[in-house]
Amino acid sequence: MHVNVSEIPHRELYNLLLSSVAPRPIAWVSTLSAAGQPNLAPFSFFNCVCVDPPLLAFAPAMRASEDGQAKPQVKDTLRNIRETQEFVVNVVTYELIEQMNLTSGEYARTVNEFALAKLTPERSQIVRPARVGESPVSFECKLRQILDFSTASNGTSLVIGEIVAIYLDDAHLKDGRLDRNSLDLIGRMGGMQYTRTTNRIELARPKVR
View 1 (cartoon, one colour):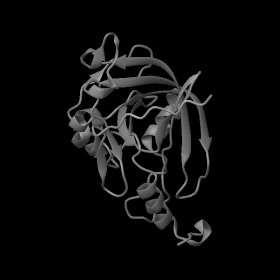
View 2 (cartoon, helix red, strand yellow):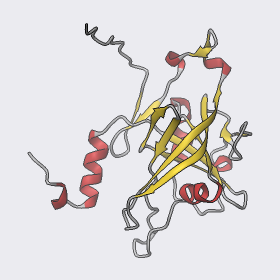
View 3 (tube, one colour):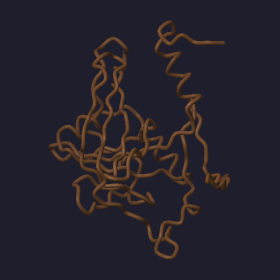
View 4 (cartoon, rainbow, N blue to C red):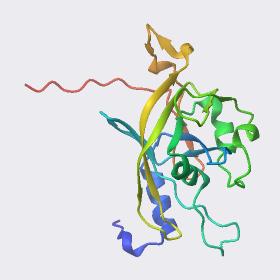
C-alpha cells in the first residue's frame, strides 16, 4: 500500500503519523501569561534538537472550537510564550501520567492546571514560569524562535527554546550525574495509547576503522 499524502483527509494523515512515528517524548510545558496566569499543558510533538546551543522544540497545533463551527484559536501555551518569551519543559514519568492527561483538556484561559491536577508549582531559577515540583527533570527555556507553518484550522507552529537552566531531582542522581535508569518516563503512541520506557536495550555502535 502506498499513500499519496495530498489525497487523504487531514484526520487520516494525522492518525497515520501519530501511530507510526512513536513513541514520542512528552513536553509538559508550563508558561505564564503577560498578566501572570499560570498554564500547564502536554505536547508530544517534541524533542531535543541541539546541544550547542542547547535547544528544545515542540509544536503546538491550533485549538479547535468546541462546536467545530467557530474559527480555531491559538493555544494558551503558544500565546503565553509569544507574550513572555519564556517557558519550562517538564518531563513526564509513569507516576504522573494521570495528572499529565488531566492537564491536556481544552480549558478556559482562566483555569490554573497546576491547581486542577493538584501539582506543586515550584519557583524556577531564571525564568518566571514555575516548574512542576513532582517532575524529576525540568528545563527552563528562553524563546529562541517560533516558526509558523500555517494559520489554517489545522495549522501548527514550532517553538524553539534555548535551555538556560536545568532542575534535577537529587533522588535521580548517581555519583553526581543523572541516573537515566531511574527515570520511569512515558512516551506517546497513537490514539489514546502511551508506553513506558522501562524495558530498555543497550546496544553499542559498531567501530569503524
